[in-house]
Length: 201
Image 1: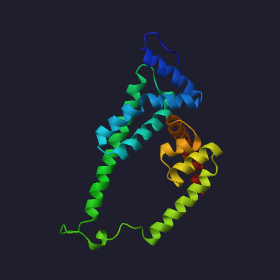
Image 2: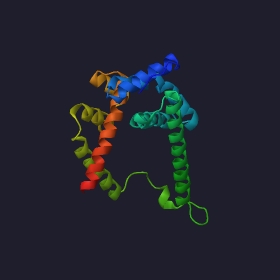
Image 3: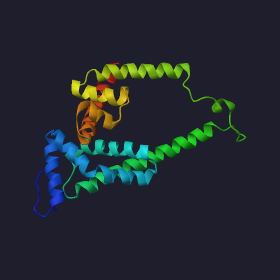
Image 4: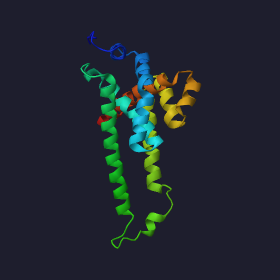
């Protein structure tokens, strides 16, 4: 990827990091995240008005961008390209959330507009739901075992033990940006393994 002379120093910095990232340099992924994570998070927070959704969408946006990094064109600033991906992903998320809310509302109302008593019961999972959840966890554990030890530890701490990013940093003695970048990679590996797993069922 050619670095043009007319680019700003910030754009040149990003291009150099992208070049390294394309050659699987983990520190380059981490640095790109560090450079734009806060700005992207606040953009997502403004769009969703929900800190948890904003954090998840920020992570998703980096994940999608890193996965498509080979499609990035230096005709545009990396930040513009990244924020467009994040914005489109957030809009899709809000549409899905709105549909789910409408669907839940419709499900909770009878034809006369009153709520079904069944829908006012406890939020606890039923026996079938519990079984399905335990089966999913069992399958996930089998899949996670196929990851390299480093990535396996990250995934187990984050999703099985429900560690925060900061707790993972302390546990593994890694900077926050590196933890998040490597979790992106781990998710991508998991996705590929899961696809192969489903094909073999």
